[in-house]
Length: 252
Image (cartoon, rainbow, N blue to C red; front, side, top):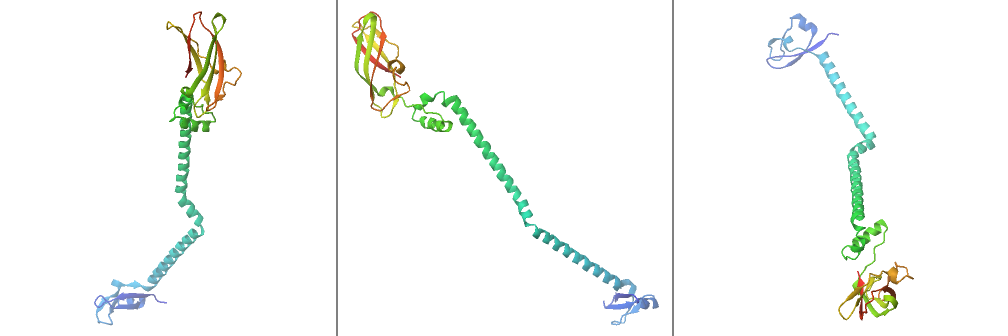
């Protein structure tokens, strides 16, 4: 079968279909059937077979492209979990970093509290326990570290009454008195001292007597309860002077 070509008239732009033998007869010169002009068909000659092949190839390429796109979309549709996992990865990383940072902050806070407790609160616990602003801090710390808050101590709320000082042989003096805790809370027994005085203004002061010395039969960690009165007694050795006055002092 002879190859078919297309050409167009340069004068009126009409398009004609020619065979190879038509071109060979007049060496490519043809006459336009519309405007009767004579022109060289080879100037705008196009092979229909080649154009058909190109068109077919273009269709095949377009079809192949469409198929590839469809397959790619199908692959994505078949793996939704992977897409979600990859998209969620940065969020998971941020959450992991947040947890780590929170843990580090908590550990640092515990370390600081421990150091503060060891170097300040514990060495000064008795004094701080008496301070209304520090006692809640000490209480909270002891609940964390499992210790016991020292009891409140207000020596000024003790009242002494029924004092008797009896001189014995060789300067031995015996003391008996009533000790009352007027506070509305229990507190430790205080230290006690005695001051003797004579008519000339001379004085003799005893050492401080601890609860272990004037309450030998009682547990020394025992507290004297609110509004409780306890009788105590102790003895001491004074000089050979004669003293007519005496005073019992509560020692902080």
